[in-house]
Length: 478
Image (cartoon, rainbow, N blue to C red; front, side, top):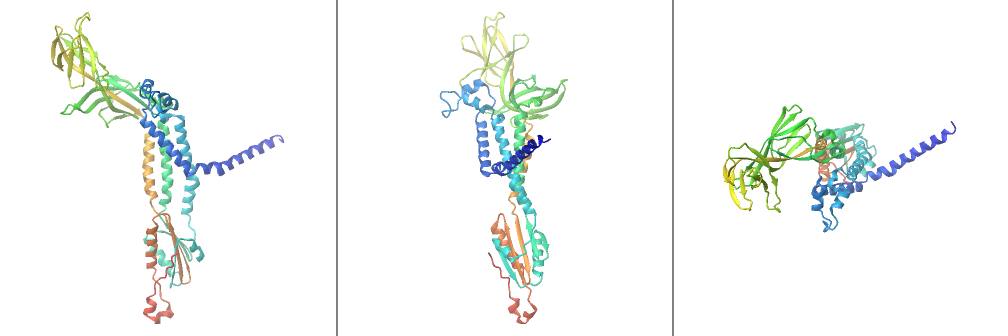
C-alpha cells in the first residue's frame, strides 16, 4: 500500500497541474477574440480556394489546367493542388482541424464570457448607499417626495415602459431587454451548429456525375468525391430510369431549357417516385438530390431502305472550343468497304451527311431520308443524353438550422439591455442607470422618467402657494 501512495499522489498532482493549465492558459487562449478572427479568416480563405479550384476532378484535368510551367500565380501547379489537397479542400484533415479549432474557440468564449455575462445580467442587486450612484455614467437626484412616494411612482412609470421590477424596502432595481444578452450566446451556438453540419456533410456526403441516354436505367456509380463515411449514403436498393430527355430552344435557336423526366425504381423495378427536372428544379429522394446539369447526344437511330432500325453511338468531337459537335460513321455496304460520316450539333433533329472525301452530300431531318451511296438513309431519331449531378449531404438540415438560429440571434443581439437603480432616503430619490447600446435613446428615456416624478408639496410650505407648487425635480446628471 505504501508503494501505491506516491503514485496516486503524483497522478492527482498531474491532474491538478493539467486543470490549472487548462483554466489559466489554454482556455483564455481559445477564448481570445484575435484567435477567433484569424481562424475565421483562414476558413474563409480556404473556402474561397475550394470554390475557385475545381473539386474532385481527375489527375489529367489538373495537369491540363494547372501546369508546372508556367504555374498559376508562379506557384500553383497541379502538384501543389494535389499535395495540399486543394482538389478536395472540404474533406482535408487540416480544414476539418480548422473547423474544430474554431468551434473550440467559440465554445470557450461562450462559457468563459457570454454565460457569465448572462448570469450577471439575470441577477438583481440593490444600491443601498447614495455614493454607489456616482459609479454610473447616468444618474440624478430628485427631492421633494417624502417616504416612498417617489419610489412607488417610479415603479409605476417603469412598468408602463415594460421594465421588470424588483424592490426591497427603499431600494429598487429594474431591467429590460435580457434578450440582448442572450443573443450573442444564440449566435455562438448557431455557428457551432453550422460547423457541426459542415463536418457531418464532409465526412458522410458524396458527389457524383452521370451521363445517361434517354430511355436507360442507371444506378449511382460514377462518384467523384466522397467522405470517409459516405458508403451508407450511396443508394444500393433503388435506381433511376430516364424516361425522356429533351431541350427547348428559343426562336433564335439558342437553348432555353433542358429537361429530364426521371423515375425512381425500387429493386423490383416498380416506380416509387417520378419528376421532370430542369435547371434549379432537382429531384430529391431519400437524402439524394439529382440536378439537371448538362446534356449531350448519345446516339443516332436510323435505317436503310426497308431494313430494321439501328442504334449507333455518337461521340463528341474536339472542336477547339468552337462549339459542340457529335459524329459517327455509318457503313453503307455489308462488307464495311464504304460508308458516310454523320454529324449533329444539337437535338433539333438535323443530321449532316459527308462522303469519304469530306464533302457534304445531304442534310437530313428526323423522319426524313436521302439517298447516299445508292441506298436510302432514313433518320428516325437523334438520341439525347442527360447530364446529372448527384449529391448527398446529410449535414444540410443541420446547417440550415444553424443559419436560422443565427438570424434569430443577430436580431436578439440588437435588443438593448437597460438597467435602472433607485434609492429613496427621506425626501430624496437617487436614480441611475446604464445600457449596453442606444445610449442616447436610453438617456432620453431616463429624462422622461424624471419629468414624470413630480414632487409632493410639504405641509409646512402650503402657505407659500404657487412658490411651492412650482417646484420641479432637480436632476444632477453625472
